[in-house]
Image (cartoon, rainbow, N blue to C red; front, side, top):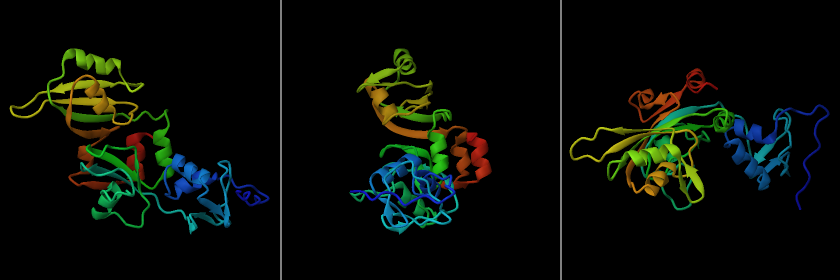
Length: 253
């Protein structure tokens, strides 16, 4: 039986527990809510499972799995994810992760970074890494429609009908998968044809599933743009820290 949360102070603080955890770099707000519901968060030694719980970080001790959680400076990076790396902080099977890779690229190992969004194991390209839960929450909100653009190399040229179908929407496994824009690129001799595809709301393996439903096999997939951020914003580096001003201006948050 879960112990009820400790009594609130006379002047209730205005910080929800999941918001504090997210701001402290534990993870996105949704992930922090899952941690609270799972009974992994304590306030002053008492396990809390109610999502509406508020906390005063200046006077109360917050812990995750018994280890104190304290706010840390926010850091957000634009990274060029290599293929065959998982977008997660750890993997039970021991496969390489984007966080391990970022640390090898020089990021402070003490930062509790996680990705904003995902790229598949086989996919590559631009992704944001952060310890700013509020930023991740803002970018996940429907009012912030952040376009993402990809280059997909395929086993054959896409027909006009296939491109029209991508724009109209393709049904796969009960979901409608569509693109905001699809532009065929000129193909060089001996190289596979490619498409530039823009997505608004992306679903799991969105592009691969959409193309395969139309009979096109994806040989390589690379994200080349997140909102206005492009590969050139890496400035020739595999990973680069974004300033808050730069991030706010670019993503309009």
